[in-house]
Length: 179
Image (cartoon, rainbow, N blue to C red; front, side, top):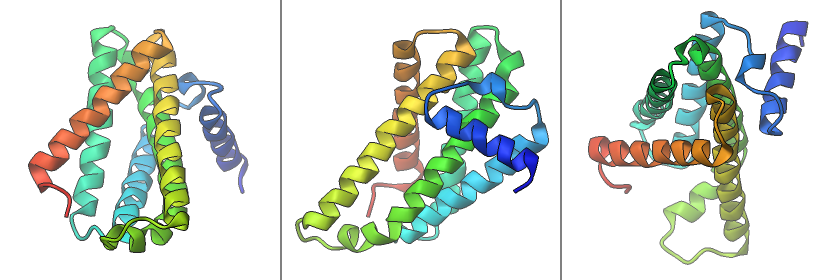
């Protein structure tokens, strides 16, 4: 692992531990675009591993668009758009990290999601892990936005939760209810 890669990984790990902030990431459009591509690929792979089908790349692009667009709006309202690139980079890096963690359990969850039967013990544990990852990701994204906006954690958490609702609503509108 190169020094640059090791440095990026250590910054991502620090964010996952709710340490540091987006200001610790370089102001690099190239890095942001690379992380966007990696994140969309990993999100799409997660959906496919869960048996959701060919719409997953479009869904992953929608998810990234919602997060990036609404984070820009939030920063613009506070007149902090100069912080956008580093904030977007941190959001994309953490999104990719969580997608990678989710990808580790997605193939194990797919059979339980496909069956109409009640969840057995193993499926319940996997569901709890997935739910834990979801709430952890919300906390990390709120931590990033708290730092980027110089706001309180509660405000940032409400902001990020509203992004989840916006994504779910748009996803359902564009792709229909889950199968």
